Each structure stands twice: as C-alpha cells, then as structure tokens.
Image (tube, rainbow, N blue to C red; front, side, top):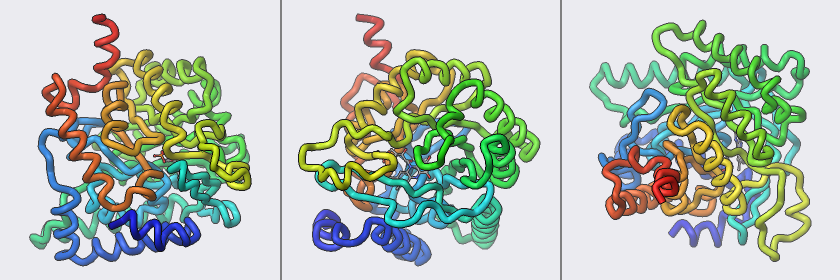
Length: 382
Ligand SMILES: Cc1cc2nc3c(=O)[nH]c(=O)nc-3n(C[C@H](O)[C@H](O)[C@H](O)COP(=O)(O)O)c2cc1C
C-alpha cells in the first residue's frame, strides 16, 4: 500500500515537501485519540521479548528514529504511535536558524539513499525546550485526569552548533542548549558529525572533543540534579579508524554513556551505476543503504574497543530486521534509522520488530541483551 503511494505520489513531490506533508499527517492522526489507539495497536504492539534496558531506561524495544526527522520535537507521540521505541529529536542549536537554502534534500530512489544538506534548520533550544515542557505538562495533566496518553516513548535530544557562532564560542553554544534542554531529555547527544555545518566535524578530534563533552556534562549536571542525564556523542562514518579508536578511548575516559555510530557520509561509495551524476554531485551527507557497510564497520570497531563499558547505538543504512539484528550482534544495544522510513513507510518499525522477534526466537540467546556483541564472543571462542 505505502509502496504504491510512494511510487505514484510521494516520489513525484519535492522530498522536503513530502516530508512535511507526511509528518503533518502523522501528527494529525496522533491527535485523534481513537485513531491513534487503532494505529498504535496495529503498528506498535508491545512485544515483551524485545524490551531493553539502556541508558538508565526500560525501553519497549531497541529501535528508534534517528535525529533529523523531528528537528523541533513536534511529533514525538505520533512517531511513537508508529512503533519507534525511542525518538531522537534535533539537531537543536543554541539559536534558531533557517538552515541552508532549498533545495537541500535529494532522493536517490534506486539506491534507497538520500543526500541532505539541511544545515540544522531548527527553531533553537529555547523554543524546543518550551515545546518539550508543554508536552510533559500535557501528559501529566492527562494522566491526572485518567486519560492515558499512550506509553511514554524515550526521548533523546540531539544538540549541535549554531552556524553563526564562531568556533571559539561553540562550547558556550552547546552549554546554552544543554542548560535549556537537559531537563527534558531522557538522553542527550552531542552532535559533532554533521557535514553541513562548516567546521563542526573538527570537534571530533579529541583535543576539541574532550573540553566540549566535559563542559556539556557539567552543564547537564548543574541543570538537572535529581537524576544523571545520560550523555552520548554522535560520530561520522568518515573518521579514520585511529580516530574512531580515539573517540572510543575518550568516551571511556570521560565516563560517557554512549556513542552513536554513525551520521551521514561525505563519501559517495556504494551507489549504483544508475545514480545520476547531477544528484550524486550534490553536496551534503549521504544516508541510507549505501552507508550500511561503513556504519557497521565503525560500530564493530567501537565494540572491540569499549566492549560493554559504553552503550553503542548503531545507525546508518539500517533497512531490514536483518540489518538491525546484525547491528545488535556487532555490539549495538540500540539501533536507529531514518532514510529507510522514507522508502518503507509507516509500517517500517512494525516489520522490523516482527523480524527481530523472529530472529531472537531462532537464536541461542534468551534476550536481546544477551545478543549484544555476540559475534565478537563467537570469534573469540573459535
Ligand atoms: C534529511 C536528514 C536530516 C538529518 N538531520 C540530522 C540532524 O539534524 N542531526 C543528526 O545528528 N543527524 C541527522 N541526520 C542523520 C541521521 O540521523 C542518521 O544518522 C543518518 O541518516 C544515517 O541513518 P540512515 O541511513 O538510516 O538514514 C539526518 C539525516 C537525514 C536523511
């Protein structure tokens, strides 16, 4: 059904318009209680066997929507209705900004890929914090009035640098966002890996990353004293292997809670011969199926380095349940995706959950937690 809609209507629309339209529809449906319950019962049925404990939270499953889809935290409950176990909102920057001029999002349909140079278009950390606060208030009021608002999805908040802020003031910009947003985040992500903000990826070098992460950690602890907000860093697939190792070591050194691997790539490997050069030459980050192998490699490398000491989140080219299972065996406790949502549609999380449950049942592992990183233990035993 979705594939038909995609082929006949959506793929003819400008990708950013199609995104806005689809997201508006998701939000609309989620505001109609009867419809929301019907959709959630079909697309987000609870499967106890997929429950995971991660980042200090019990989550209904391991599969979440990656950052960039809901930049302003406008549709968390609608996305949970579609079966995402967690939703990572953002990237949110210290100040509001419009992002790059359009067109800035491109579909490479035969490759099941996207290229984007959105440039962190978002309403800024003050506005997003206010929206998250209003949502929490609404849920509390609903619960007090006996109207359950549905299972609360886990909400990650991904923060990045405001483009207009000079690099010397970048740490302050992240700290401002942290002070505003930490209280509303089940976990916080420092994004230093988008290719679309000039100079951002230089913060992946440990000399720059150490002070940034330390400052964000301190700001989160100052802002939220009743609990410790888990802190993660999101890295690029374009890092050299030694740099991946360096980030892994830094994460252990700083007591970071997690690493998200990976963001989009500036490489253009893995595209089919039919990809038109006019499209592949667009600047921006490539995501979707062609990113799969490199993201998986980075994840494997990280797991070898950190083992169970740091929670790993596998993202990049995950389309099928098989992809998600592969990430878990490679060391991911949580798995995310974005691009395949565009191509697979609203039933995507459901089919991924079904497939994961089948793989777990057919495996020697009693729980998903037992399967995390299992391929490395097998290799050791052999
Ligand atoms: C249109 C678009 C916008 C994105 N925006 C962000 C963002 O704001 N922050 C971020 O950390 N990642 C962003 N990403 C990257 C995704 O979160 C994800 O890391 C990447 O797309 C790889 O996953 P995928 O292959 O499943 O799409 C964006 C991706 C796309 C396609």
